[in-house]
Length: 151
Length: 151
DNA sequence: CTCTTACGATACTTATGAAGTTACATGATA
DNA sequence: TATCATGTAACTTCATAAGTATCGTAAGAG
Image (cartoon, rainbow over all chains, first blue to last red; front, side, top):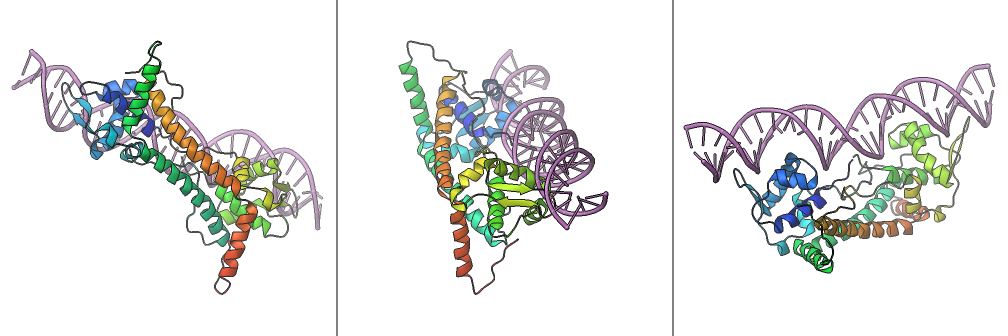
């Protein structure tokens, strides 16, 4: 499988939306991500269902943030975009008859679950507001040089 | 992508090999895993290169364990089978120009790296010998009932 | 009212990589 | 020398995110 980049992409988009007055169109967001408006709508649909953004049709329409950045964690976004599979490795063949295989599966999957729990905890502990603050801090630190942004 | 099950499968095979007198053929291993001898050879090739198993051609040939179970960790096996990609999620687009994207990527990939480090540490801490001991313990605990094995 | 804009939805294609398959060469043993 | 087993290459299948094409629908502009 190709790397699932929905989380990163969506975070990128949300932070830009937060710094943007008025709605952003799927077209504009797609240009930002180097992709296509349909891909954008597909991913943003989950955020709309979760109530993090709203969408408007017609002239002046597009996507708008509808949540407080402090109230949305990276884990929330992960779930909103489909909560996709985290690991590329694992065991096919759950519930094996073979007792050897059971021991192996428990060891491997137990370890994966530990790593997943850590990942989930960390993603749940970071809010969009904190990412925005990191960005602002970086801007201030580099005030003398150029700060590039794709929006 | 389909789940990469090379680690689990290989561990399963190695533990069976450890309890088996004489070489096991790719044919027999394939039957055990519900797959094809060529898939078995492909995966076992990495273990042979790492020195964990040997292979012999001809009558009475097949695969034999060549290492002490206590000396091989699950991480070693993971590496031997190709050290495949662990995560299904991530960010495409490394080294972005956009400063917002940089902040996002650092947060997401930093978190993934933490989880990966934990996973690596845990896999490195478990030896094949420990899995074999877990299996034996389970056998003893269930001595009264049936203990199924696929080999 | 009509045209344009933008989302909504469906259906299809592309890309990627593990797994599966086919076929044949090579070496070891009986 | 016939058989068994690995070694290797080339190809197909499968799953899924991403990309694309197209049409429908709602909202504002004129």
